[in-house]
Image 1 (cartoon, rainbow, N blue to C red):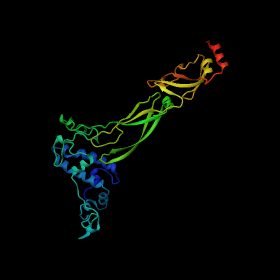
Image 2: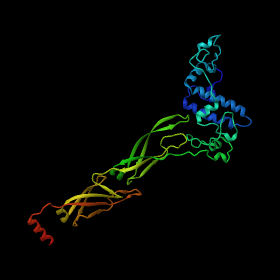
Image 3: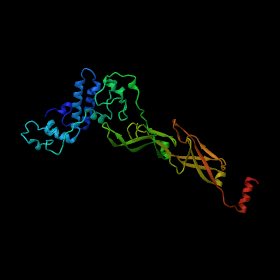
Image 4: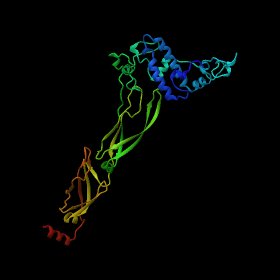
Amino acid sequence: MGVDYYKVLGVDRGAGDDDLKKAYHKLAMRWHPDKNPTNNKKEAEAKFKQISEAYEVLSDPQKRTIYDQVGEEGLKGQPPPGAGGPGASSFYPGGAHSNSFHFNPRSADDIFAEFFGFRGPFSSMGGMPGVSGGMRGDPRFPGFGNEYFSSRFGGESSTSMHQPSHQITKPPPIENRLPVNLADLYKGVTKKMKISREIIDFSGRVSQQEEILQIEVKPGWKKGTKITFEEKGNQAPNMKPADIVFIIEEKPHDIFTREGNDLVITEKISLVEALTGYTARVITLDARSLSVPINSVIHPDYVEVVPGEGMPNPKGPNKKGDLKIKFNIRFPSRLTSDQKAGFKRLLGS
């Protein structure tokens, strides 16, 4: 079969795409000629070329099928050992008369560039024909600049290696409104949001990824509170993914309104109740029943304050604002003469 590509990459014959990528990543970094510039450079060049050729064949389904059937000779249009005499090549895949496949091996550095997204990561250590150096970081591989290769693979770093050749930018955050009702803001709630975003894998391919983001809304959070998920936006070349930001939006409540950490409720009462006394009955946001007796004369600007029955304080959930009860007094539309006389006697002229 000639060269055993599986043995070259150190994988078994059933290896999947991920296994091949991991094996190639490890070996390509070890045997790249720029990493071996002195005594063993020729050996490294040969080894690097063989590793890249093995990856090219085994990562391509068509080439891998032919290789598994007839070996390296079949890929290169040569009869495999024992294939027979003249004309035998027309009876196996990849043979001289076959129209199904022709093996055109690529440059090892082209494969390296396609896999990693850049060429010549060890440019400061010497060159290799066809390799352009100077790459000091790639947005798809955070931390994979020359500093990474030097520290991980034992190379010597210089001041120039630590200077980025370009600035990796980050787009503005992606903001989304998150409507939350007042009861959930009072008690706290967990919201789950499904997002779909574009990611770039190690081969440079763009794919869609779905993810569930879990948002912990704390008791007492206010409208405008921001929850940030760093770098959960789409990936793009030469850019970091944008942050995704959710902004709390308070849904209107049927009974309560909010003023800071205070809750406000308005009760409709009659003029008689305003003058003679009234008991307010309030169902709280956590479903408790409050009974608040009021013996004072209630005028249009009167406010009854119930301490500690407002919203939790986000900085200290055990502390709460107040409940403020305001009043809408229903005055009679008309009074009889006797009623007017009676009010005058009671209240004075």
